[in-house]
Length: 66
Image (cartoon, rainbow, N blue to C red; front, side):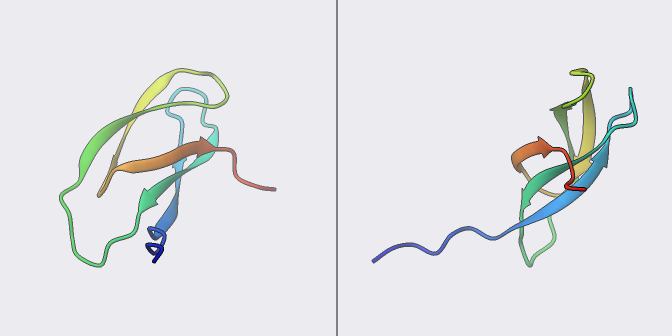
């Protein structure tokens, strides 16, 4: 029997260095979790910056589709 795929949400973020809008994929949970910072590498300028979100980043960052 196959396991159900994990649910996720797409969360928009903005690079603090170049202001590029991008998206990270985060686990979707129904219960509240504490916010904690995670480092993300910008897809445009390649500088790292911190984002504070309520769960682990599963994928990204990705450029938003136009």
